[in-house]
Image 1 (spheres, rainbow, N blue to C red):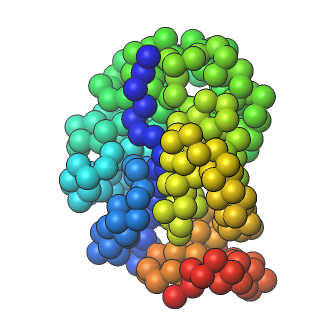
Image 2: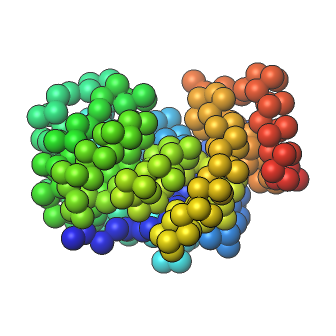
Length: 296
């Protein structure tokens, strides 16, 4: 049995930026404190929502190092260190381990894609080059590559492959992973609108975009389920479904950075090629957040 790195909700945290696109560490510190004070169980830094794909390698490494130091052991810090290049993923992953990250989140190779055999080779190489627990990240809508349940099972045999962030949207696949891997591979939802559904299929929680603006609710949905309060968990999931979906009216993290600004933080712009939402989507996000009493 592999103990999960966390249970509950890990925030897939935004990277606040100045208008010139540089990382705004002062605002980042305030935002991390807000997350911890409101029940977030872990932080995923430099993931998709943190704009990892537009951070230069030196910035990526600096951001992880700074985050680990600032959090200072209050909750686990999981570093997004995936890449379409195995060599690059190993380089960033090794530095994240040296800088004190508690675990690594590794998206499947994008653009290159590879085969299922290639995935086994890719993840095995990173596993063997590092010394921290690893969470596989399956998000085929962004990468064009799905981790098959049988591949997840083979990877679960490696001692430091701790779990999988499942964002395929395919609940039958989640059931198959659970059936094949049992307690040797923890499962976290990668979709905020499926937290309850994945908990029903053996999940341990969520790696959440919603947590950026509603950390207490994102924490409580899986926490209530774990406590055996399934009806309350489902009711809370239903209550926050509209807000969760509103964070995806445009490409992530464009809407959630807008939303973080609306709750009173200086999230700053996204980096190109991501651009501001159009006025229609901005108005929808703001109106939805007003329904939840979140706009400052």
